[in-house]
Image (cartoon, rainbow, N blue to C red; front, side, top):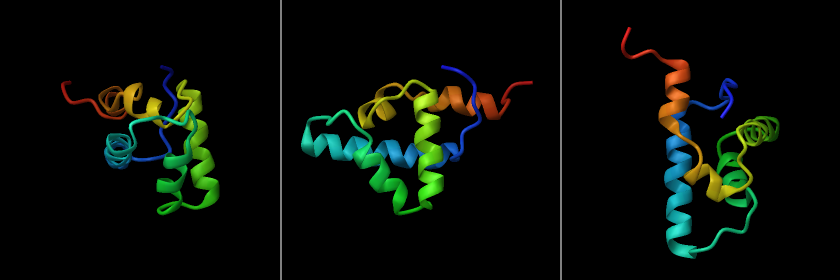
Length: 86
C-alpha cells in the first residue's frame, strides 16, 4: 500500500471496521461496493469529506466494504503517522 495521508483518524477507521464487521456478521455477503461504508461515513462527515475518504480508500487499492476490513491494516497506517520506538 502506498503512503497517502489518511483523511480520517485511525481510531475512526477502527470504528468503521467494527461497524462493517458487524454488518457482514449479520448479512454474510459483500455487495462489492462501498454502500455500507458510505452510509456510516455520511452519518459523521460531509459529502465532500466522504468522497475524500472513499478516494483515499481507492488510492490504497480498496474496492469495496469487504476490503476495508480485510485489506486495510490500521497498524501500517498508524506507523505512517506515529513513531512508537525511536
